[in-house]
Length: 278
Image 1 (tube, one colour):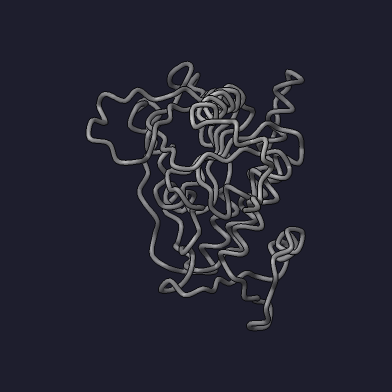
Image 2 (cartoon, helix red, strand yellow; image 1 turned 120 degrees about the vertical axis):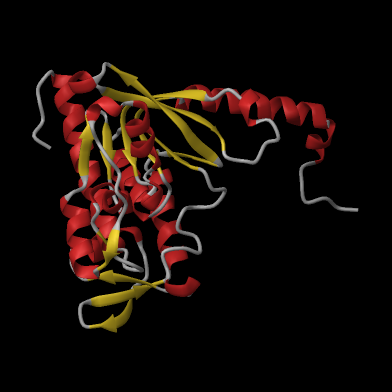
């Protein structure tokens, strides 16, 4: 009987394969626990930011607590396989990723959200970003307090259900910058607010739906929360009580680009010992 694989590989038993998996996993983990940028949230915003930062040679890790990309099956009205994107900067970014655009209304295009998300993700990975799914943020790593507070990474753990969560220690991820792109969870900012009440920051939640105001607010308010921590995408709405936008992804993509530009500028300024204006 013919085999589709080289006959020579049959000399490896399951123990050999397990050793290879463990060895390469440890090598990869050693690489991704110390990065330039930790992007939390593998949706349109987070993946766009990760792609553009990786293109600029920053070492990027994306984590998401789901075992699928954050927008797979989401970001659509009543789980229909359609999302909308506005003409302009967002469409230009979409074209750069190869996302297919279909006609809709004047100035508004229709996209398949799963295709769009996957194509941005592939761009990010091809540019050098790393993706680690099934990982949740358990805490933040900080230095200083009050006005001196700086976020320097996060403590992560498996997002899979465990019988004894208390006995599972998290792993450190050291990062020069952390981007909260967790949509309405806004989990990184919420964790920081809980652990550092002295910064007197609140997360009031998103306001009611008002699509065009919301799109504008999300983009305008994307940026630094405290040194080392940035907020983008729908997390912006949650933090600043901006209006909900629904199944439009243009603002999310532009927000991802904006935060990538600011993070890149700030990290380069820090490397030169100067202060960036963002």
